[in-house]
Length: 135
Image 1: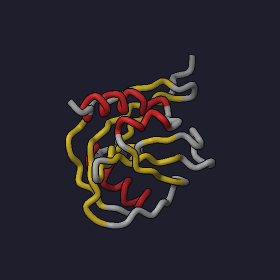
Image 2: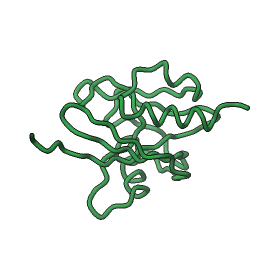
Image 3: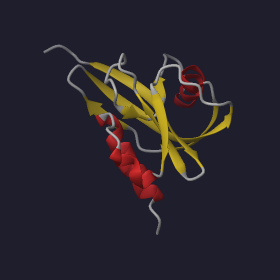
Image 4: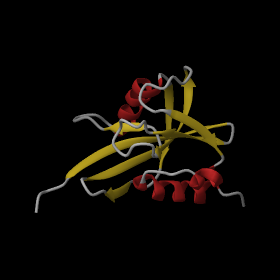
């Protein structure tokens, strides 16, 4: 059996005014038209937080502040395996300009499951919703 590719990705759960940013993958991307947290592949020798800061400038033209990490999540797709390293973040400067995604939306955490997410993001959403659930 062929060894499946394992990709390591840092992703940003960007919070603003009690809402969370969700980004829609464009039709030309792998997993087209699925919602995801923005971020990208961690380059060799690059830290997870560095990766996030670089990717958010590249993908959306914004500078972010990287906050607390959540639990990494690994998902096995048919063609590859991905491990996501999520961090709660906030935008510190810049206005969002989409360079890769087709659209974004801001939602309350408890409504995030209403979108059609990439499977790898689902455990991260579940953990984030547990953390942010009102008492």
